[in-house]
Length: 488
Image (tube, rainbow, N blue to C red; front, side):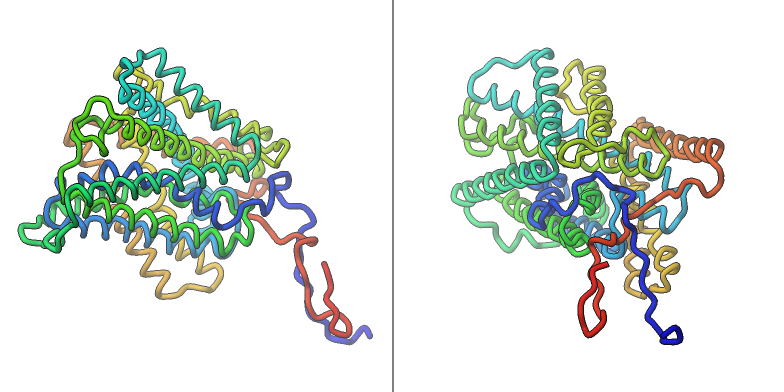
């Protein structure tokens, strides 16, 4: 009857703004592997992890707890967003929901630059370790031409894997990280057999310096940048609102545990003081070492997994921009397997920026540009601070502000802002303006982008920070006539 009260039926879309992207292809395990690959736990543990006791001195373990604790706070903040909606834009979308279009576009520029430099770091770092493996078996030092060939082959490998589809990409990352973590555990075992077990004195705070401990914490927090990139795969993940937050937490737990273990193992003996890309862990001080050559190859593959995952995340970000209508629309096209192929290819010049900068600075395409990498880390920290600041306004629009979220947001904002400020001041004290200059460039580019959008498109024609909505064919409504289920 017309007068019968009927429950209001929710509105669901028939087409997604992100149609064409492969949906529900990535499982939880593979999503965790993506996040772990970006953190490269084996590389950071065998480098900074083993050396941290010598760098910080007493209290090194507090630096590790504080550094990963700050990352865990950020994960709590990001969980508040990713558990409520799914989007390919990750941090960019989060900031848009809380702070509006202008700040979101600045963060979008920061993510493009930060992810792009991270891709380049993975390519150059991987190629550098392949060169180190060659010299570890007695080969002569490769020339610059060989370095460029290795970088280009690495980039081509990433493109080939991504072209096969998101399932291939995440499975490749899972395989690479599984092998690299097994390598790391093997090296730990060899060191314990060789030098003995770490003693309880490693946890002593006698003679600890607060300044050194805090500086070490900032250094470790900077190593965790881009762990949130798995959120960009939310549209392609099974049950994303549960899987994405779990992947962030699990990746930090795995990496933090391995890093702290490396700290303790590092108290047994100082690591090889050779260059990071040519170190020896099995046969210390040996010029030729086949086991260490194999280890360097595995670490090189792990760095390629880093490049692959950062490349995948950046392609989804550009895809999101295109579907919102704020960049070239062709970037929103997908090919076979639901991959944004044009966005993927357009990233290649940015990915080669790091080897090009390294070649200009030092004459070798495989030498990582420390200035560029450090500046990009600072930019990512600023993007994290914006996301933390956006949480409370976002929750206020939903009338879901809770004390726990406010505290996490405030602490995360203060912590990551302190890390970014410390890095800028430290670089300025060393006579370098890379971080400040690049940060200023990001802000100017974001503001110019905002003005360009406003001048070319009518007010309200563009919605910055779009997220996925429930589709009719994906929703099951209960409570139909005679208790039957209704498929919308």
